[in-house]
Amino acid sequence: MQGLIMESQLLISSILKHADRNFGDREIVSIKADDPLHRCTYAECFRRTRQLANALAKLGLSRGDRIATLAWNDHRHLECYYAIAGSGFVCHTINPRLFPEQIIFIINHAEDRWIFVDPLIVPLLEKIAAQISAVEGFVVMTDDAHMPETSLKNAVSYEALIGSESDLFEWPVFDERTASALCYTSGTTGDPKGVLYDHRSTILHAYAEVMPDTLNLGSTDCVLPVVPLFHVNAWGIPYCAVMVGSKLVFPGPKMGDGETLYNLLEQEQVTLALGVPTVWLALLQYARDTGQKLNHLQRTVIGGAAVPEAMIREFRDAHDVTVIQAWGMTEMSPLGTASTPKSGSENWTPDEYIQMQTKAGRSVFGVEMRIVNDAGVELPWDGVAYGALQVRGPWICSGYFKLEGNSDAHTDDGWFDTGDVATINPDGYMAITDRTKDVIKSGGEWISSIDVENTAVGHDGVAEAAVIGVPHPKWTERPLLVIIRAEGVELSRDDMLAWLEGKIAKWWIPDDVVFVDEIPHTATGKIKKIELRKQFADYRLPS
Ligand code: ADP
Image (tube, rainbow, N blue to C red; front, side, top):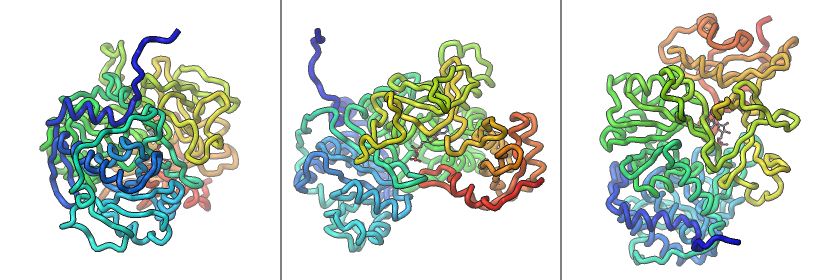
């Protein structure tokens, strides 16, 4: 017997309709190439979204067609998110920091028909125009007054495209499993792979994200996503923050600038900000150098890479801000876990609380996780055993775009292998120790490069640290610590080794420390260990 509940499709346009009706006066603040501080309300933004939907309807597209965006975080990009997906097309966000060859591959693989591009990114597309000739036209995200001279085919300014359109639009109703957005993984090896989200997965993910033990997001919040709209849906913020009516602050192209971020956080009274560890380094540094405190920010969600303990402490001690570490990936929409307290935490000491925050966190309802050994046998949640981390759930990809049924990351029994190695403690807190491919195996035992790196960056003299395995005649592999010194600091190999002493297991202490000026990063800001290992291929440990 089935229940007697209405048939109602979970569609992205329903978020917009709800927010428009209930939070029409909520503000969206954006830094843009053509406006240093643009303000509009939800109602204005959604009126423009309907105009854009009417403009898209005239382009001769069919449901499921891909329309790409190459743009920074601002209200126009948000309008694209809703107009494209709400119309039944697929919003394909592209990371402008990828290599040109990757961007060419992605655009052709996705068969993007039109591209919305930020004026600052137009030169990048002009350079590759000949290789993406199937694209029918380009919308430059500005007005006619600021429209750059461009050789791009059928180029039109965003404002000219929508300007004369009606602001009445009836959002179509279709199956909630219809594809809504597409995002390619950066692909440290091989070609990038496309993750295709649908309306249902997006809405379920948004519900999970606003829950108290996840982001605890509501209409009185003001949210600043420093995470880009061009990568993994800015961690779902465009959907979940709009769903509950939070004020939104978009930093445009100024995402990495500590001073801009500080001023935005203060002036707009931001309560929740989200970003990868590197952006917070810039912000904390600026606050430290200028002797200023963050007066409104209550919590910051940090993920995408392990969060150093020193960062969690500085946010708490200098700014009274609670760090929520989160873990996830492109294939997971991206949210998997959040490090928030659970019952019993009332009795934790401040240090125990910090220990919880240094972990990736507990799985949110909707994400099941398990750790398995090399033979695929499930390992206990004892905080000690570590193995390959696998997940499943309604917002985790079941395959890759145009590679359906051809993924070696999916197991026969329906789990997705994340490529991460982790432990899970009896309370359900998961901690990432490494990427499977980066694991250092010494004398048959794994060394957690993430723990070693985090302990190293706890030293004031270290700006960035990376640990890689190098061949060793007796132990197979031993860790080598690669360090960028903080500016103007004297720091020797022996200082560093002495600092690690007692803070990590003795046999994890690297055999050597080398100092470099630069550490290679991927387009999403992660350390490129493959590159680093190549760089040190001829390196020999001191005997
Ligand atoms: P890509 O850079 O290929 O797009 P993602 O942005 O999807 O990849 O990043 C996912 C990966 O980032 C995870 O599999 C994990 O290795 C790493 N990661 C994300 N959050 C954390 C975290 N809190 N701690 C450690 N690693 C993390």
